[in-house]
Image (tube, rainbow, N blue to C red; front, side, top):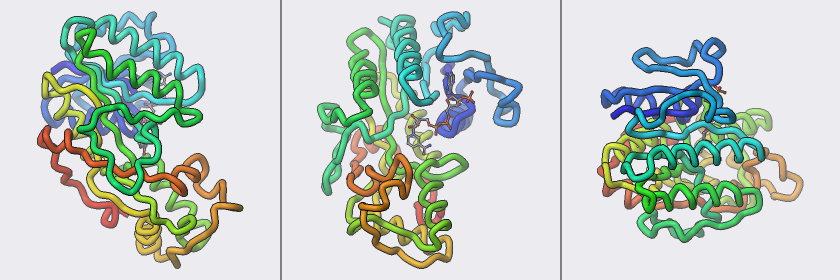
Length: 290
Ligand SMILES: NC(=O)c1ccc[n+]([C@@H]2O[C@H](COP(=O)([O-])OP(=O)(O)OC[C@H]3O[C@@H](n4cnc5c(N)ncnc54)[C@H](OP(=O)(O)O)[C@@H]3O)[C@@H](O)[C@H]2O)c1
């Protein structure tokens, strides 16, 4: 396949590119500034300069590719608008072709799963309009609805993603524990999150891209841990005391943006559709990674 990947220098995008190259797919990566990102570029990959915000003027021909992986990410309203416009351009270029659009997703759009795992085979009626996620949910619904336009789209969701350089939540957990001198969890820490190694997540993208008729949501859920278990893992790995329970009140900024979800939400998934694709996570568990 000829695959166009946005976010080619990013944590998720670069791992997807590596996995695609391992399966001998041809990859074009979008990079904002090839000089500034020189150290992150991989041999065997064709890189083109461009910005999602002005992609329509880039002259890049999406139709020349069999698939687009949209792994670029940023924050704010401007970004959401630009990302939406880009997705529209892909859907227009690919309409009626059965080509693929693949997007990475953060599972928080599904809200609190509760203590029983949410099965990806149940489809996507589970979007919750959590404050701050409304636009993201709208975009994801549009992407998941695009098979009706003849575009084979899927969204691969990850929750607690670890491995390599750039894993957001593990980095914050580790840094906070080191700063405090102990590894904390909030309230009783019984809420449960699914976890996946970024390389396994990337492998799932490749499998789903290679399976021509595969569309819809798919969960990359390799293992699951309660937040107390996560705190124990962080304590052990860093030779710190703990895990130690702390109250939410007074610790609202403990893990920055992730404090409320990590303190109050379950993000517990069963990746039935991933399993049916033949996905079998192979990378070390979080205990070994930390
Ligand atoms: N990291 C995690 O642990 C994790 C876990 C679960 C879900 N996710 C989700 O995965 C997504 C990707 O996260 P990430 O960790 O890979 O982010 P990242 O490492 O910060 O990478 C973001 C990428 O997007 C590119 N980008 C940003 N703005 C752009 C623009 N206007 N035009 C073109 N490219 C642009 C960046 O390119 P430049 O090099 O030019 O800046 C970079 O390649 C996010 O939606 C995140 O929520 C991440």
